Image (cartoon, rainbow, N blue to C red):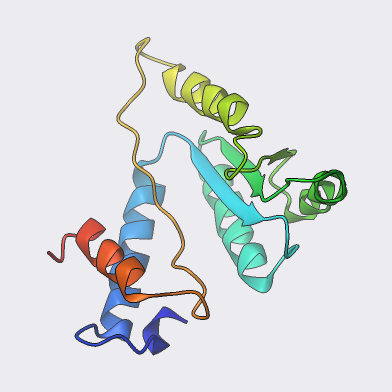
Length: 152
């Protein structure tokens, strides 16, 4: 996990706690929740845990939850995206950020959901992402997370 990242000058456990606190705050204030999964690896235990938390948040209020499956960049992966129905968050949105496939339609849906209700303008958009997998984490990612959490 993040707490085990061997990065000079960063206490991984503190960073992990700060990320968790920021996530709890964002979940409490969100107008729309978007879970992004990796279609190339299928459903992970982390995906299942996040989906469980998002189902609980959705059940407590009227916060819509969208599920997007990135890296659906070929026909085989597009078909496999349907496996993510198992997470209980509704129909997954297949997309490929690299190729730009599906991202426009997903953004349109997010904006439409944010604009519903009192006014006709969307609230400010705040993006949160899970920390990268330890195998692909690097100093730049940790520095960026620290900056986003107000540590610098």
